[in-house]
Amino acid sequence: MMDNFTPGPFAAELAAAGIPDHLHGWLGSFGIGALVVKMGIKFVEMSPERTIATMPVEGNTQVAGILHGGAHAVLAETLGSFSAGMHAGPGRHAVGIEINATHHRSISAGTVTGTCTALHLGRTLASHEIIVTDEQGRRLSTARITNMIRENAPKQG
Image 1 (cartoon, rainbow, N blue to C red):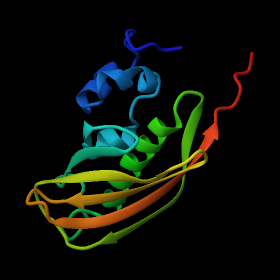
Image 2: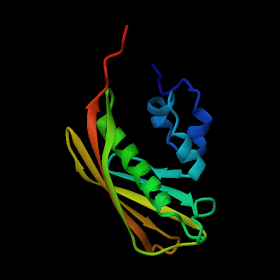
Image 3: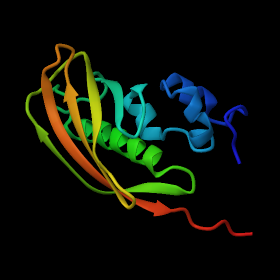
Image 4: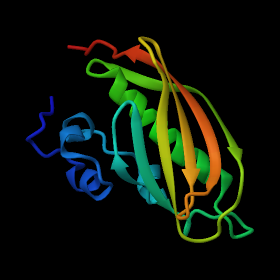
């Protein structure tokens, strides 16, 4: 059992990614995931209703030198899943069951920002819309993710 005062094995990773201190207890034993670290995603704001993060274009491009469509999806799924996980609360967890994305324009340099907004926060489902923008605020992609909220399995004694 982690509390909010005992640093977990991922304390440095959480701090580097911008995870607020009050969420370290929740994520302290798991971290944010290797892909989130690899993609360079940094959190700016986190809540079930709204989560914002940035991601560099550099290192996340496809062969044509533009931000990979899969990178858009990784950012969207990360934001939606973290938001749904916070909504699920203690004793429950979120499992992604559907994601889609529409790409509106490309980008070849700089940083993108994903803004995740709750569409529905229910007892068993949470749906979020994620808008990815460039540094000028232009929309690059729009994604939607639905997560199923599940009870954690009982601990085996």
